[in-house]
Amino acid sequence: MDTDKHRKIEKRARVAAALKAIKNVRGMFKRAPGEKPMSEWWSEYKKEEKALEDARFGRMMHLGCSTSGEVRHRVTKVIK
Image (cartoon, rainbow, N blue to C red; front, side):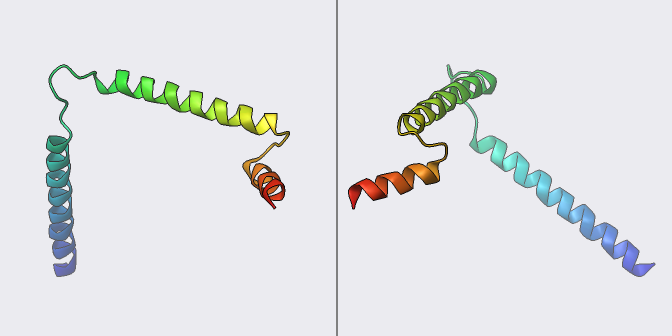
């Protein structure tokens, strides 16, 4: 029974430490006045990432490859 009591106390301490860490991190990442909300920022970020991914895919298809490994192989072959 004594070990169960100690486990509960330790668990409570870990939870308290985790909550404190979360609170500290939230304070570090506050938005500046006039910045976009996270949801808007995230949607724009994902659009930019998608555009980069599509551009990369287009370059790979232009080289006639289906994977980045094949592109690397063809480029190395051309350079040698």
